[in-house]
Image (cartoon, rainbow, N blue to C red; front, side, top):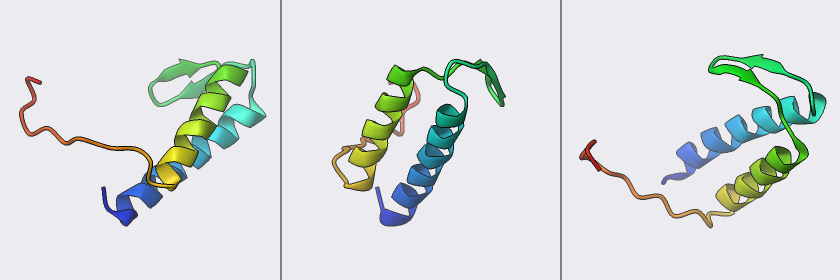
Length: 67
């Protein structure tokens, strides 16, 4: 994954983390439907964002959609 893609994904995580922090335990209407952020969800997103930002996540790209 190149740095530009990583920066875009980190921005997505930042936005979701902000939404989760401001709405813990409340239902939020998102593009994909209703979402109720929890403390565990927030902690998970923060950990994944940190790993992604520091390049610790290995991503495999598949060209065959049947995999």
